Image 1 (spheres, helix red, strand yellow):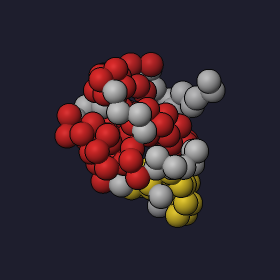
Image 2 (cartoon, one colour; image 1 turned 60 degrees about the vertical axis):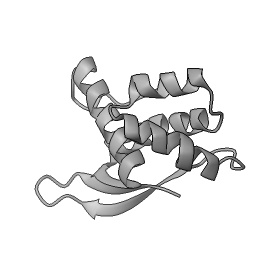
Image 3 (cartoon, one colour; image 1 turned 45 degrees about the horizontal axis):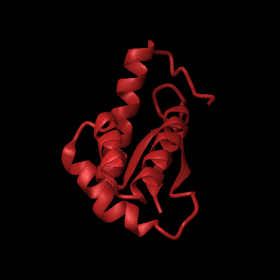
Image 4 (cartoon, one colour; image 1 turned 60 degrees about the horizontal axis):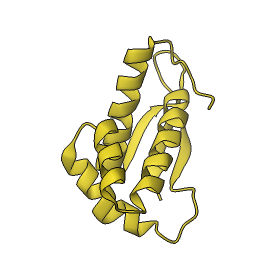
Amino acid sequence: MYHYKLGRRKDHREAMLRNLVTSLLKEGKIITTEARGKSAKAVAEKLITLAKNDTLHNRRQALAYLYEENVVRKLFKEIGPKYADRPGGYTRIVKIGPRRGDGAMMVLVELL
């Protein structure tokens, strides 16, 4: 799978993505840079697909990735069943313009 390096070491990049995805699933939307948003979207979609089938194994896999247990509960009780009939495309990326300081393209990543 192709992913962005995001200018960070592997451990930092993975921790950042885990934080982004946890926040996305907790809040329903996040504002971040385009590259980070695309990476977070890919991971979030895989976790939502995992949550469509509520098994102990799937819950443990989600717990191993997400930082907050209450987010895992929300993922399996609310988000997974909500998208049960949808074959994919659970998130959307909307460009909101360049960041003022450095001109990086900012995006809104949200659950549909």
